[in-house]
Image (cartoon, rainbow, N blue to C red; front, side, top):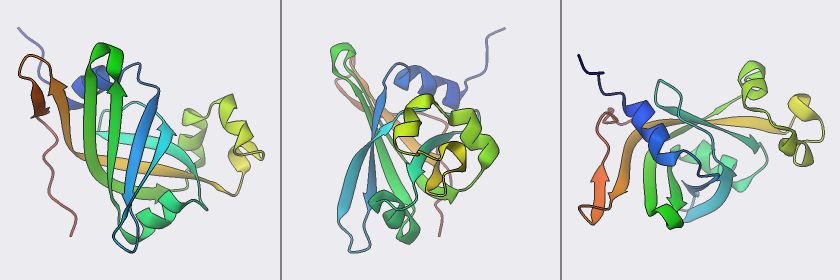
Length: 149
């Protein structure tokens, strides 16, 4: 008997080993803003987590419009993934500890207790990837969720 399809696991396969994601947010004036983020995996519920400073332009943009896009690229392997979803700003010490790496100390000198530390919880709504055999981007099934109103 075959295993059932798991969209979060498939998405993790597609982004595995890609260390940098480009997060695009929508500023309050409607313009787009993109910045690099240390890539994390997708949890079993279809959520990506990132550590950020609370006083950044991306956080300000997410406060006014939670719609975001994440782009992952591995040019040598011809792997390209685009994820759209909704960003929620979260303060969760337990989750931050789970995501923490010593490299974050340079941005957060207070460590996990740094008051500037905030988590970005990205709920994946849609994912697509470059299908080399088809020569185009294709939807990754399993992430069609109702839009937030």
